[in-house]
Structures are given as C-alpha cells and as structure tokens.
Length: 254
Length: 250
Image (cartoon, rainbow over all chains, first blue to last red; front, side, top):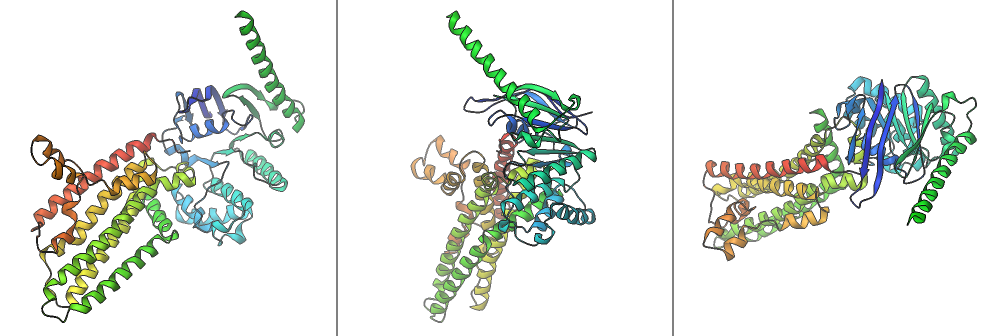
C-alpha cells in the first residue's frame, strides 16, 4: 500500500518561481524514504504540499490513499518541521497535552503517552518548565515528542538534524532505526547525507524542483556514508553537464 | 467540535500569556476608579445630580473605546499571529480543519469581549444602585449592544487580517463605519440608500442614548440590531473561512 503518492505534483509560487515540477513519487508502507537535495531543490515545498500548507499548481497528492486536502488522515501522521515553532507559554507537559488533545487522544491514553514520549526524548525532568525557557536542543526534542505522541503510522521529518549536535544526530539515527523496526513509514528530507545512508531503504534525489534519481539502497551490497554522497554528487554533476551541453547546442544552433 | 474548544481555550491562554487580559482589566479598573471619583464629587449636589448621566455616558464611551481597540486587536491577531510565529504548522498538521481553527479563535476572542461588556454593564448598574440613580431603559440593553459592536469589529478585523497585514486590517476596521459619509455628503437621491448596506456601528453606541435621546425603546429594537450584527459577523466569518481555506500558511 502506498502511504505517500504524488502524480505530476507541481508548484509555482506567486513570483513565478517553479519550485516543483511534475513530481511522481510513491512511498510504501514501512519504508524509510530519504528525500535529498541541495537547498532550494523543492524538498520542503513537497512536504508543505503533502501537509496541505500550500496548494499545488498542478497534479495531485495523496496520503494513505486520501487527497491531502482532508484532515482525517492527519491522525495517522507526525510531522517535525525544520524550524520548530511551538506555543511557548505552555510548559513541556502542557504543550504535549494540547497537541495530544488536538490529535484526538483520550485522557487516560494521553497521560500515559505524554510520560512515555517525555521519557523517550529525555525531557521528563524539564516537563514542568515553560517551553520559552527551553534550549534549542530541548525544543528539537520536544518537537520530536509531539510528532511521536499519537503513535503515528507515518513520520515526516523536514531537515530534522540541521540544528542538532553530533550526539543528537546519532540519537536521531537510532530513533529512525527503532521506528523502522516497529514498521513505521518514515519520510526524511535532508541535505545531510551522512545521516541517511545507514537508515534509508530508498532515496530520491531532487534538484531544481525535479526528481533526478530514485535509488533503492536495499539492492546495494554495501551502503556507507560515502557511497550515498558519491551517488548524490554524481547525479548533481551529471545534471550540470547535461545542462551545459544543452546550452552549448542551443547557442551553436543560433 | 472538541478541536474547536481546545483551540478556543488555547487562544484564551495566549491572550493571558501576552498579559492582554491583565492590561485589559487594569484599564477597566482605572476607568472605574476615575468614574467613581467623578461621581463622588457631584452626587450630593442636587443641582448637578441630573447631569450625572453625562458622567455615566463618558465612562461608557471610554470603556467602549478601549473595548473597540481590544476587539480589533484580538480579531486581527488571532490567525495572523499563528502564521507569523510559525506555530500554525503545528496545529494544521493535526486532524484540525481550517474552519475549526478559525472558529475556535473567534469564539475565544468573543468570550473575552463578552466578559468585558458584562463588566462594563456591571459597573454601570453598581453605580446607579449605590448612588440611587434611576436607570434609563437603554441601560438594560447597553452591554449586549456593546458586545454586538465588538462582535462586528472583531469579525471584520479577523476577515481583513486573512488578506492583508494585521496592522492595516486593524486600522481599516477602526475606520470601517462608513455610513456617516453618505449621511454627510449624499443626503438625497438614490445613493443615500447605499448607506443602509455599509457597516454602521452608530446604533450600537449605547452611551449616546444615556444623554436622553434614546433610539432603543424595546426588545424588538434590540432583536433587530442583534440580527443585523450577527448577520454582518456571519458574512464576514464565512468570507474569512473561504479565504483561509485556500490561504498558503508557510
């Protein structure tokens, strides 16, 4: 079953910038999917389209077989944005309580889950502190806790480790492996390749709003950080060479 | 429905966090004290006693003015505040429909404004009672009329803030009573009737009626004005919902 499905998904912003061009993507159940590309390649735009924060200019997107415009399927997904902006006047526990209520968790289960996720992200001792007093790293952890709170089947991470220290990064990698073991679907957008090679089943390489390559890492004999990096740079270089040669042929035609 | 209530509760909490409610209550308290001292100065003078309604009207006008500013603020910042802080993403990635989000915010804003209108009415009744003043008929309706005015302004500020900068939305809302333009410049001819469909808060300014020229006589008048206010608010909220449905929130 496909958890994420897009068909010719495109997005042109008001200024005329084409941020995403005919993206055809399928992410299957229990898969860890890496969505990589340089800055401005359309990764965050894709995630915002999947979450219905912005409207597509063309094509369609589905989550769990339903159009993204509905709200029901969002009970089944957790989202960690690149920049975590939380309602800072709550304390840690109060914030999770609020988000849990919005996610439809009932009182007893909610209380239990709050304690579980607080312990999981290591914030149980800071749960009574106001969120505005949290450090960047703690906010990142709290952002992770709110995404895991309602036990979602799909987790969407947008540049999850961009503000993390090396320890945080390693912990994040362990978390993804743990989620993988539990059979969750994980969609990670990142430009930090070292964190993806070890955890992803498949990766998609984006550049200039286009899907350039889709690779199944499970078919590789040996996946390490450098092999994914090589794949990425080969793809980018290939694209640049193609573009340069097409420019050259255009100018020679003229 | 539950999501709507959670968002309402959270908005009230936001306003408290911004010390908004506190500042609001302190302003009210200062006005009440000033009003108390004005009344105390004149209440024993039998010649001035009939003029006390002027003091009452001034109190009510001041309170209404503060209330209007507050209504515009809570309306204009309800949605735009979440967008500018980026916290809207954390709400809309959950099973919350955008209209629930908008209505939750509006209900939170209206709870605050209803409370404020009731306090205004309470203070007015208290002073009339303490100083043995006969209440005018319009005073029975004053808090509700004031709330109706807040409802319209809050809805307008909310609707405008979905299409423009909240500060601009606030200023436009403040000057949105346009009926006077037609009353002043186009007193005759077919264009005069345009004033009937323009936003008008004049009849809701109950304090004007404290000065003896009451235009509100019965519950029937009140019902018609209530209908007008809720009609205006409904149209504005529906427009805001439509706009928010297609609004890009990143």
